[in-house]
Amino acid sequence: MAELTTSCIENSGGPASAQLPTIGKAKGNCIFCGHPLRYTLVDLGLSPLCENWLSEQDLHKPETFYPLHAFVCEKCFLVQVEEYVHGEDIFGGDYGYFSSFSTSWLEHAARYVETITKRLSLDSSSLVVELASNDGYLLKNFVARGIPNLGIEPAANCAAEATKLGVNCLVKFFGVETAQELRDQGQRASLLIANNVLAHVPDLNDFVAGMKILLADDGVLTVEFPHLVRQMEENQFDTIYQEHYCYYSLYSVEQVFAAHGITLFDVETLPTHGGSLRIYGRHVENEAQAVTEAYRRVMQAELEAGINDLASYACFSEKVAETKRKLLHFLIEAKRQGKTVVGYGAPGKASTLLNYCGVRTDMIDYLVDRNPYKHGRYMPGVRIPIHAPEHIDHTRPDYILILPWNLKDEISEQLAYTREWGAQFVVPIPEVQVF
Ligand SMILES: [Zn+2]
Image 1 (cartoon, protein in one colour):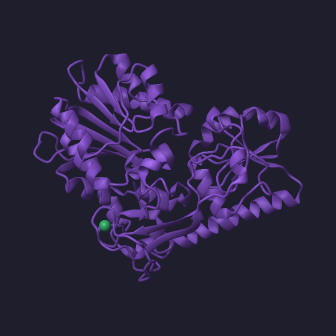
Image 2 (cartoon, rainbow, N blue to C red):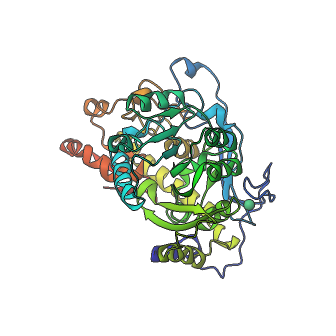
Image 3 (tube, rainbow, N blue to C red):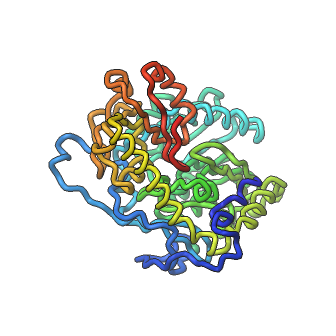
């Protein structure tokens, strides 16, 4: 974990720097502790909802843009954006994100299931519950092992896909009410999983309180989320969007779970989503699971990097602005030389990046994505058309900008054949790199 010390802090001259982040004007208080939010981490201007891909007809209509402004709470150090749109309007009904379109994510899920099944000795008497189970990409591995499981997923179209895989699905938002209903039916989770959902939860305290209720007395919960330290170190500002309310360090997430009677006892650092943490938690009363050395090490590294020092958050805004300038410089030069640039992937993060940088079809001809849901649609705000990946073969672009930069190895391998006509790959984050 030595790399943690190369965070925003070190780049700005070390924690001795007395500079504080810019004072911002938040409309609300901290989503976790309720303290007034006063300090800006970064202000990304105005942005549309990043997963509202537009149809042809939508092109003739106006779009709603919301302030995209991340704050850091000076009391609990939870980084958060202000909520302008309620979760039900984003994730309920149909939702365009299907986990199963990423090969490496599927492999990641399969490996996790194998390891955790052994570690917790899960069998046909256990119950595995996954919150935000999406299209069943993970739980299907428990189905294959004959381990009882339940997915709780608010997007009906995702849950329908999961059901086809034999996953038992409840189409609902999760919180205290849903947890209590399940518990009243005698359901308690031996293993409770929440991967990449903690950022999306509009009522964080209700969600974690629900986890406390649903977890069996000797149960274990595991939660994965992108690690704030890596997001800051590597300029991953495009992971900030309306649908992501919160951005966690181990330091801040420990406080959230502790407030609801959950003790975190282990942590793993993962390469997923540009650098994530997987935390392990249990009831505070269940002392059978001792806090591991690995946990202490990661916490110590965060503290040494200044995670609980406001000055550490001061330089992020400028790092983000410089990342934008470098991307625009590359694109302007490429266009002036008469080169063609297209984008691979149309994930939510591409919307933040392209809208913040003001990149439209003047710079990028089109985007491609493996998800057929997006084909024939347009990126919100910047309105760049999205095609199937095969479109690249017809137009033979000079540069392919990989927007899900966290999957750059997987994608550049899939597109290796484009080298035939001399195409080069580009990633925008942590800074422009052509390869
Ligand atoms: Zn707070």
